[in-house]
Amino acid sequence: MALDGKVAVVTGAAQGLGKAFAEILLQNGAKVALLDVNEKEGKSTKAAFEAEFGASRTLFHVCDVSSEEVFKDAFQKTVQHFGRVDIFCNNAGITNEVSWEKTIEINLKGVVRGTYMALEHMKTENGGGGGVIINVASMAGVVHLAGAPIYTATKHAVVGFSRAMAEFSAAAGYGVRICMLCPAFVRTDILNALKEKDKLGEFFRLKHLTENLLDVAGLMETSDVAKVFLQMLLDDSKNGAALLVTPRGAAYVDFPAANEIPCSPL
Ligand SMILES: NC(=O)c1ccc[n+]([C@@H]2O[C@H](COP(=O)([O-])OP(=O)(O)OC[C@H]3O[C@@H](n4cnc5c(N)ncnc54)[C@H](O)[C@@H]3O)[C@@H](O)[C@H]2O)c1
Ligand SMILES: CCCCCC(O)/C=C/C=C\C/C=C\C/C=C\CCCC(=O)O
Image (cartoon, rainbow, N blue to C red):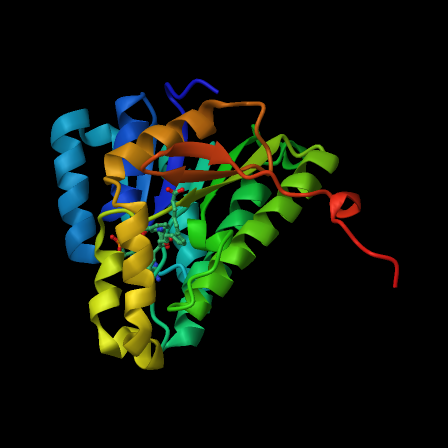
């Protein structure tokens, strides 16, 4: 997929990884709708992009992905403004083990909402032009973080949901690819939760478990992850693929097929 003239939506685009994904899309010729619940940061990011790429290339809508109504409204406004959407990146996410229902609402249900909405618009069956959906999971969607069980659960769920939807989309002939990005630790505000008892609750006393993993794995910059995001987005051969991104490099996860899982006779 060439990006020149394509229209992308990125949730959680005001800062961190979402901002870096939006930036690399803009650098490669796409127009980008930035959706984020943080109005102040979103407006400032939009202003910075406007100065660099021109006013007509970006949009910002205040949008909480945990509200079906608000999310749909922001998406519809984006379609009205740019005329279409070709790329949808479900990136917004939080770490909060105390308000765990909220974490599920944003990290999982927000991704499900965004995926359904994007598919409905892009699928060729409805006269759409096809496209690509990138769901941002985490390495914690493939291996677990004992210090953040709900975060882990949401990211595992995003991986399972996206893989199932990718196969469904291909089988239904929708013309829409769905892939997952699974980064290890990246220098963004989400990691501040590691220092916040009111976010980790009872898991705060074992925060060293996550900190030890971070020490071993190392920390990436958002721009490093954005380069890999772009490669996956542009690779038309990938559907249902989960790309792990670590400071050592990137690799697609080799999930076993059901009949490849070793079993002993009962
Ligand atoms: N930073 C990491 O180490 C890391 C690693 C793997 C995956 N991730 C994932 O990357 C994604 C982006 O996180 P980040 O690291 O850039 O963190 P971040 O906190 O810097 O950015 C998250 C963004 O999402 C927005 N957001 C939060 N709740 C929202 C909501 N309800 N609706 C809309 N926007 C909302 C925030 O305002 C913020 O702009 C998340 O899904 C996260 O789980 C992060
Ligand atoms: C409160 C924690 C917030 C975590 C944010 C997040 O999504 C980061 C997850 C990163 C990794 C998760 C799991 C395990 C990492 C363990 C080892 C990585 C080794 C990487 C390598 O191969 O070098």
